[in-house]
Structures are given as structure tokens and as C-alpha cells.
Amino acid sequence: MTVYVFLGPTLPREDAARELDAVWLPPVAQGDVARIAERRPTAIGIIDGFFESVPAVWHKEILHALRLGIPVYGASSMGALRAAELHPFGMTGVGAVFEAYRDGRIEDDDEVAVIHGPAELGYTSLSEAMVNIRRTLSDAVADGVVDAALGRLLEGIAKELPYRERGYGRVLRLAGEAGVPATDIARFRAWLPMGRVDQKREDAKDMLRLMRRRLGQGMPIPDARFHFEHTLLWDRVQREAAARPV
Image 1 (cartoon, rainbow, N blue to C red):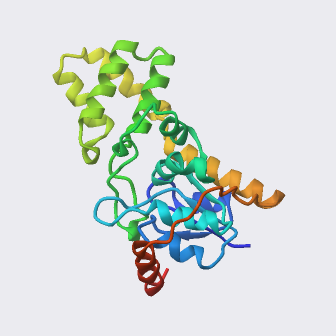
Image 2: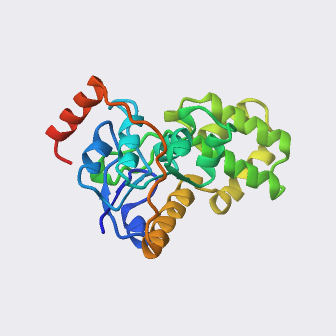
């Protein structure tokens, strides 16, 4: 049984390998799922994906894999986005980020986007995902570290920043410039090292654990009840995917 998982900055590969025995691939890009599907793997997992400098994974190639009877799982980042869009067609979404997209509580792609380092450095995240900031601020309000009004203010400041510039330090500096009392900022800053939540990482681990359980029980085949339309564009994507190595 062979499982392929596309992984980048969300979770260190060594941590992922403790959760699931899989072939670990870089963040998914257009054509990657089409190529992997031709190998007829036991399952495919999508966590991270390219989206800006490289064409993003195409919905149709995921549908193609599902139509072949290959289970496709998604969580955390690009995986959550595609699962929210394709769960009616048989893709399995996992985690709070997927559920938020599925239910329409968040919509923007930038909610999960981060800037990261190169593959040689393990795709280290260099900014903070908006979904992580939202979860952390929600916990801070629940713990009484900040009140609801300040939580909304900090969330709004973070959301207005370009995804490449998001980070708690930048948010708190802007909050201070906006007139938030220094004592409130200091209290949140002191709580942050222990209170910060990485929702994307939690979701990624949950997806890998679900895949591991299902492998042990017998991986269910997706119920792909849809008509797959073969088009000239799809044929071209398949040809291009076949010409490139995995």
C-alpha cells in the first residue's frame, strides 16, 4: 500500500512521518495529482500547495483521481480549500480550517497563505496564517487575556495586512500605534508563547491520523457520483503531467 502526501510549511516532515507511513512530496502544483493518480496509490493527501508563482492544483485532476477510486484527503491549507470545494464529489476534508471554508465562515484564499523558505530549509514559515491568528485570538478572549473588543480589533488589523507581512509582532506594533494601552498589549504578548495555536498544524496531524486509521481498517473507496467530462484541455494537462517526473 502506497500513500502520497503533499506537504510544505504546515508541518515538519519528521513530525508528519511519526503520524503516517507515506511518500512525502513537496507542496502540490498543477499536474501533480494527475501524475500520482496514474500510479494508482492507496490514497492521496493534500496539505500544502503552491498558488502564486506556480499554477495551483486543478480541481479536475482531483476529480480524476476520485473517479479512478483513489481516496483524496485534504486539510490545513490548499488541502482544506480544495476539500471544501470538492467534498460533495467525494474528497474528504479534515479539521477546523476545512470546516470553516465548507460552512462559509471564511472564504478568502489568503486565510491559509504564508510566505516560506526554500525546500532545502524545510519550507519554514516566515509569516503567520490568518486562520492561526483567528484561533489564537479566540482562545485569548476565552482565557480572559483580552476582551472581545480588543480581540476583534487585533483580528481586523491582522486581516488588513498582506499575508506575507502577517505576524504577531507586526499586529501588536500596529495595535500600539492605534492607541491600544501598553498594558493590554504586554498581557497578550506574555500569554502568547504558551497560548499561541497552530490550527493548520493540528488539522494536518488530524488528517494523517485519520488516514492511518483508515489504512488499518481498510481504506474506503470514494463515492464518486459525477460525470467526468473529457476535454481537450484535460487531455493536454494529462500529456504535460506525463512528460514531467514526479
